[in-house]
Each structure stands twice: as C-alpha cells, then as structure tokens.
Image (cartoon, helix red, strand yellow):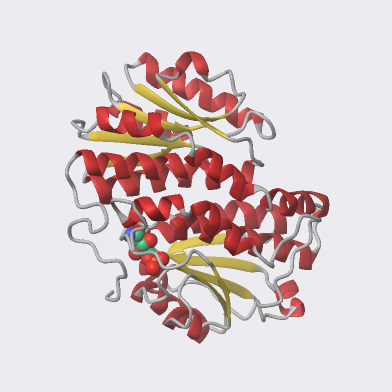
Length: 369
Ligand code: M6R
C-alpha cells in the first residue's frame, strides 16, 4: 500500500506530478482552452460577482493565500482569504454577489464547514475545492471543483496542496475568461503553461538528494526561518507549517519585506534561513529586493538556503545552499517551490526519529471546532 516507500508521505510527495496532471485532465488543453462546465454556477452569476472570499484551514489556507494573487491579477475582483476558524465570528460582509471558495482536502473540516454554512445563510454562493468525493463540504456547497490527488493518508498535506493550487488557478483563470479582462492573452498563455507543469514538478523531484542531505545535517537545530515575497510568502508559511508538524521544530515564515520591521532581530550566527526567490523575469523589482534581503541576513551570520529559478545567477554569491527549480510563470512558481520544502521537512522528521505519517497530537481530518 505504501508502494515500496517507507512512509505514505514519501509516496504522496512522489505522486505529485500525477496528481497535478490528473487535476488538469479534461479541464485544460495545450491550445489554451479551459473547460470547467462542471462548476455549475452560471456564467451570468459569475459575471456579477464583486468579491471573492476564500475560507480554509492550515495548508488549504496557504493555497488560498496564493489563490488571492491569481484571482486579483487575472479577474480584477477583490479577494479576501480568511482562516475558517475566525470567519463567522467577525461578522463578515457577505451578500448574493460574494463568491465564497471553501478549500478542503477532506471535505470534513468542521471550521470550514461552519464558515460555509454561515456564508450561505447570508446569501453568498459557495464553491468548494475538495479532494474527497461526496464529503460534507461539497455536499453543502452550491458547486464543487474536485481535486484529483487520490487518497491522501499522511497527516501532513502534500499532493492535496499542489492540486488545491491547480484548482485555484483554474478558478482564477475561468473567472477571468468568463468576465473578460485585459489579461485575455496572458490567461491563454498560462493555460498552456499549466499543461506542462506536471513535468516541471517531476524535474524538481529528480533533484532532491542534496535537499535530503542538507536536512539531515540540520537535525540538531532548534529553529528554521522561511522568507518569501509575493506568492513566495505563502510558500514560506507552508514550509514552516510542514516543519512544525513533522519535525516539531520552531519554524516561522515571513514576508521578506517585513524583516526590517522586526524579524531580522532573530538572525544569529548559523541560523538556517530558507529563502524562496521570485523569478528574475517578470516582476524583477521583487527579485532584486529579495537578493538584498539575502545579503542582509547573510551579513548577520544566517546560513542561507536559497530556492531559486534555474539560470538565476544573482543569488549565487549569497547562497550557502542553492536549490534550483524550473522556470515557471511567476504565479505558478509555488507548484515547484513548495516541493523542496516538503522533502526538507519529511527528511528532518525522519532524522529526528519522528513518526512521519502520524505526527504527535494531530489528526488527518479535524472534525471538531
Ligand atoms: O482537510 P482539510 O484540507 O480541510 O484540512 C485542513 C488542515 O487541517 C490541514 O491542511 C492541515 O493543516 C495539514 N495537517 C497540514 O499539513
């Protein structure tokens, strides 16, 4: 059942290219067309949507944070992302023109379910992104877009996360297509890029041995920090969450621009800091800013672990460890940048003698509030 792997988590990490491809299957094609007829919210309703609100917990919440960048960019509709556990307690502003997107692997997370019930009571339309057929969250939603990750057994979410990202991109692109924005050409290009993305995930997996080695060498550390900008910020948060739940280490993710507003005080000699670097193409200002962040923390003694695109030479002088990821469009980078962080956390957990598939105190599906 573990298919020759020691842990379900390893198997599920390895299954990611297939999970991504399966989630795209029949929905995108190489010519840049998107078919999401299964989302049974009529185009006329989607054209009236004036706000998107995403609710989710844990790793699914991180997928939502990334979705916000994609939705606002491609659709020009404002998008909020909220922890499901906080949502209904702050009296959120919702009406018939709000599209609520509830993201959940299990479809049974009580916090997310309560949030979507609250949203529907206020008249909002709810679209579920879910990995479990017929589970409660899709049953209680107006529409559902299933992720096709297959069963995820390890408590730590990996392949479900990547497929949640794919589903979020599809929703963003679809909304953009239905509503028509100035990004029509870009949308077509990205749909084409998505049909190649499973291969990029595969290439990352083939180069993970140095990451495993690095993780083993850090098994005695107490703290690891993660930095990112733009969509790399939620990737940093996800890297930190994986490390907490699997390695039981103190791990925090920050937006790199926030460093000087506080977190830089944490930097000390030999502290491992993982930095997710945005592409030097496209939003190159962001890239240059993060390179100076890496310089700053390294000057203060940090041991820099840099995740950067192939061909990005600017980071080389400041990287104690360099992890290469394939070139992707800016917004899609989380699909490849997250994978080394999953491998890193899994290997650290193993090196520290932890139970990889069943971390202490955690349950796969949290069905209490
Ligand atoms: O089943 P869900 O996607 O609703 O679960 C949400 C979180 O409980 C889940 O992502 C949790 O954070 C994972 N253990 C993270 O790896």
